[in-house]
Image 1 (cartoon, rainbow, N blue to C red):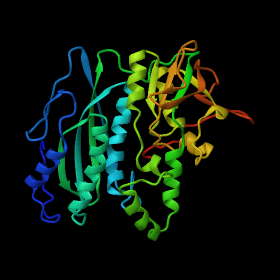
Image 2 (image 1 turned 90 degrees about the vertical axis):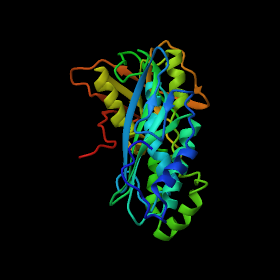
Image 3 (image 1 turned 180 degrees about the vertical axis):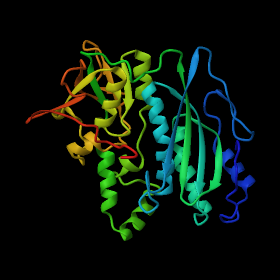
Amino acid sequence: MPKIARTIAHQAHVGELALIRSIRQRAPNVSLGQVRLGIGDDCALLRPRPGEELAVTTDLSIAGRHFTLATHPPESIGHRAIARGLSDLAAMGARPVAAFVSLAVPQELSSEWTNRFYDGLLRLAQAHKTTLAGGDLSEAPIPLADIVLVGSVPAGRALLRSGARPGQILYVTGALGGSAAGLAKLAEESDSDRKVSNRRRSSNADAALALHLYPQPRIAQGLWLRKKGIATAAIDLSDGLSTDLTHLCEESRVAAEIDAQLLPIHPSATLQQALSGGEDYELLFTAPELTRVPRSIAGVPVTQIGRILRRGGKRATVTLKTAQGARPLQPTGWQHFV
């Protein structure tokens, strides 16, 4: 694996070379030849197709911040770590090519935990034809994973946050708030319940918690939107609708209005969770008013939730319409350092 700094050989006496060999055997090149050289050298070699450019994103997953060992099985932690980057690629309309995974774990975690982490990560990577092309292994006081995702998109065709214009319509894929509702349910469980449920979920996630433990990035939907030229702007809902819509408005220099009665709220979620819960990994996108947008894309529902407005004056960046009237919607989703 490129630049693996330290071994976790003390974990059940598994040597570094054996561990790398095991990961390499489990991570075939499934990126249609765009990964020319993967695990085994100091660097990976990527070869974009003619007329394409690379989209690159990175995310950290840190114990105590993005997951806890008590509530999240290793497969879920690995799945969620790569799902975040895949969702970023989906929002750009990019096709996944390669992943680079740097994993650090404390001494007391066994090699079984590490293998289960890669079980979850590789399962989702292979489902989206994403080659694990390199990374790093190290020891750390707490578990953390740093993931770099590389995608490919036709030059000049990537979906951006900056293309929304006044009069255009806002759409969202799937349902909102389900991940936040699942996280709340996890927090309510007792320690004894967690031990039992983690064993069960390690192989078959409970349906009520699957949206949080095993979110599905909308790669197919992002690719469809980009190929059809329907979306004028897009962003993935990782930090919550209120925050991510604010990001899109700021990049496009517009305002937005959404209707609470139109929001596709997950049956287990509240309006507040749908607005600010985060980690839904659905796509929020805009399209011209007269564009025919299908009710579903690749089997996932698409819902009109509002429209883009001109920015300026006393108008709030985002306004929420409810049965009681309209009010400014502040970005109350996930933010670090606040």
